[in-house]
Image (cartoon, rainbow, N blue to C red):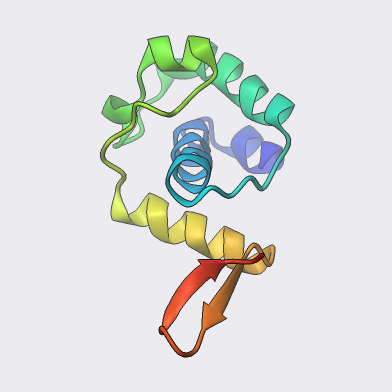
Length: 105
């Protein structure tokens, strides 16, 4: 995550949305809380210079609180990327019978 952000500051928004989606919508944590909190703190500082197309979904008060709980709308691209990350890290498994991805127990 950090190396990706170093190359492109707009990636702060992408990672914030992906990680928030995984945690608040799918109950999946793929990195420690400290890293998520650091992401929020750094994103607050960088927000004025970020031109990401989904920047409008980032709420500064939520960042200060270290949360993405208030996000009600996630872009499809953020959800898809988040699910891909969870699958790659084996947090999700395919349920053949129900034909859906489920959180690994």
